Image (cartoon, rainbow, N blue to C red):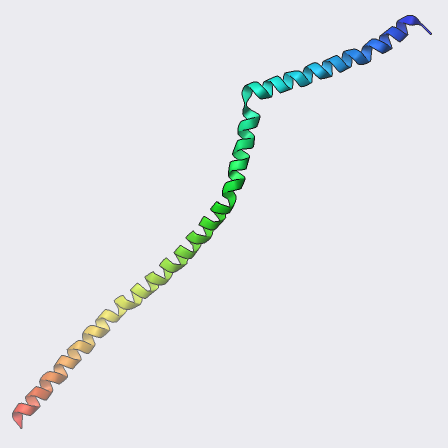
Length: 106
């Protein structure tokens, strides 16, 4: 076996291993220095923890919208009844006056 080829085969894996280790160390340093990984993890955890609150709030807002819709319909029906009540009141006053006049004429 040629000693040069043996030497090359033996050094090549070590060089590759050194490159991999150095690259891994570089990536770790970048992640630690930037803090972006921690920030991203923190944001994800916060979003997940708020997800149920967001869903509950959405449900509450939908119920509130339904209630407001019902109140608006009720208010509209009351508004429509005002002229009817006024007409009934006018009719009652007229009947009362007519009965009072009939009592005086007898």
